[in-house]
Image (cartoon, rainbow, N blue to C red; front, side):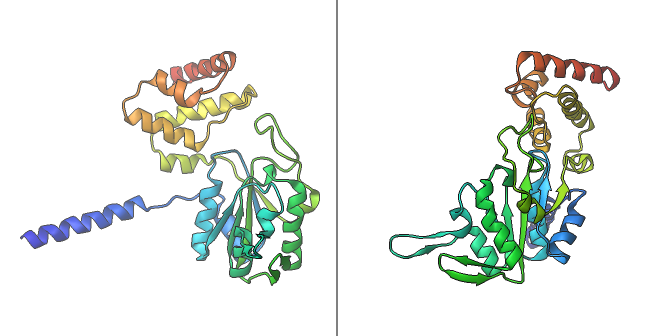
Length: 265
């Protein structure tokens, strides 16, 4: 009887672990997987912060059975090429590892990179080989390149003011995919319709009023966490929704939320 109970408990743990590991996918996932996997083309995902670009690329890498090598914005060429120190030892970069061993090289925030440093990446993608400080290397057959950006490479906008204008040669290397917030994905991840309507209304409000503020999928996650802890709505609005927002902008958003609340109690 004791043995049966232990087995039951172990089974429940496995089932719970399986439920935790259940994954949901962005609506663009299948297309991105085809572009990166079957077509083997460089892809750039363009969309707002917190829309799930990083998660999607990790899912693509997992589906292809490839290691993902992450690099944030490239501010100098050495983040791509690597370098030799005073003792002649070569220091590898994530790009070098993916390029020579195979894997998905993920360049996050490419539009915050130094445009001149990206020329090196352009050369490697076009030629299929590159001369690193350690010597000439040819592109591995399973090398893939994916980038993420908040803008279309035309410089900053009212939300992302510090973004650079990317060279046309850099943009020409990539398939560019619009990667926006996926409401159906958000509904699956956080199935609380009242919270979703609340955050979606706030999101539409800042877009309509051109307010420099972001309500991402992460915002919904934080909102739910605090709500489940019994935190009052006013505190959640101050700490999650309207954090850092000036008084006038906050009034506009809250008024829109009040109007929404009249329709959806």
